[in-house]
Length: 347
Image: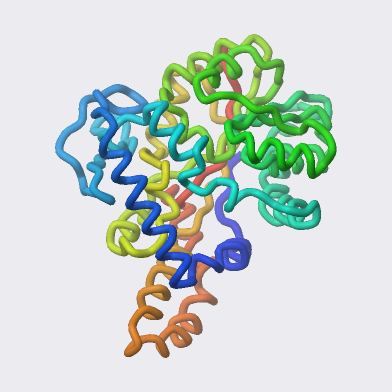
């Protein structure tokens, strides 16, 4: 099963702050600080996915070198994702995780569940039913669960045996108190492999957290060794024209590269991962926000200059009606900025 495209309505509604000049300044400054921290980490010996040695960088982003793997097409930063780097930007809150993901009320939490996460659950359940599964009977564990929106989306859709693991104690405590039950469990970064290898789940999900794993191949080996897990469902950022936009507009908040995203997946590198770790691609959903990124980058730049500020209205009138149609062109070529992928674990 393969799907392409999704309405941009959610991006335009929930990412509207990223059109704001002050917000962009805040996040672009943070991206530069994270980039400087990343540059202080040891150099990677080779590609995150296949280990192939790097050649010359394709380009420099926030001071850090990046390049495509000549063998599998994965897009790598040349420095390592060390535990120290991850701890500083996630556990210590350098990336302001709580600000982005934390909701103060049940109503705001559930609104985000309905608007953003429920569609992911619908796609996953459609794919499981195609495989002859009854999704309501399975056990689910979401790793890198953030505030637990995906876990709640699962439960709301009838998957009551769903829990999440998250490294941010603030997010875990806030959500568990908000709902009066232990939806989320806290784990340290350095025990993630142990959790993946031993947790009793039929399906393990990682919604935009696989790219943050410090040692990808050892983690995937651990997950495959889990005797209970039969399915692995991921959402990951992918190689797309957005990376060029982000290099071209360094003062606009980066959405795909930087801020802890030090490497990006491609269709080829995902296929290599599946080959190397016994995963069979069962269902894919390619969609993204490349055109949204183009629109907001130019909007922010126009708004910063008095002589072009009035052009923002014209730019909106021209581009907003076209975003979904133009984005579908990227999606159907698997050049969207993200992919949702359900895999079956082969043993």
